[in-house]
Length: 261
Image (tube, rainbow, N blue to C red; front, side, top):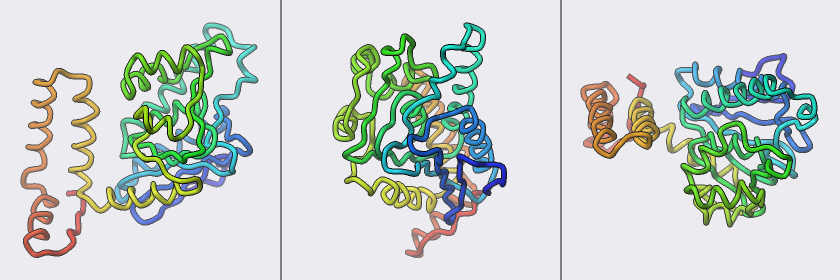
């Protein structure tokens, strides 16, 4: 899975789980090079039929990702600024709309780094992590979808508090604000993410994909329309080989062997 020309992203397979590692120490800044390689890695694991879930982590002790490369900001024009954020949004949309992704967060997750975290399906943060969107202190706002994803996750009021003030949250505070789904001791985020990833990977892939779609798309619909989508996606799973295998394995009291068919 790893490509020879990747220098700041690592991609490996652990069973049915793809592990993506940000490797741009010491702060894993989301440079243009890193974003390009991340986009390739996302495409790669989404195209692998035997990969069922992905985990994103980062090297080093200081940061998961401390933000975008602000060295490029002084030279931006309106046109190049729009191109910059559109590129980031496209990559994060691809991440959000593909296979389930779990993020293992340690250290700093700031600015674009937190926006990457927000684009994942499930966030596991360490107690000593620090998460925030400090862009207003630079005279800008979160441009990779952060204003939209954070508000949908924690509500508009909390989002305004965090984005307008630029203040950061500890891992515990992020968990209490429902920005993270799980809080773990320092050094345990990746192991916890892998445990959950293996659990998801053991389930029927088609069912997992349809359930994720029902939740994600349903949030943008009325309750009635969302339930109609749920019914449609449920009906698509009827009579699949995986449904037959799941029911048979349950009655035979054994582990199901799902094939994604």
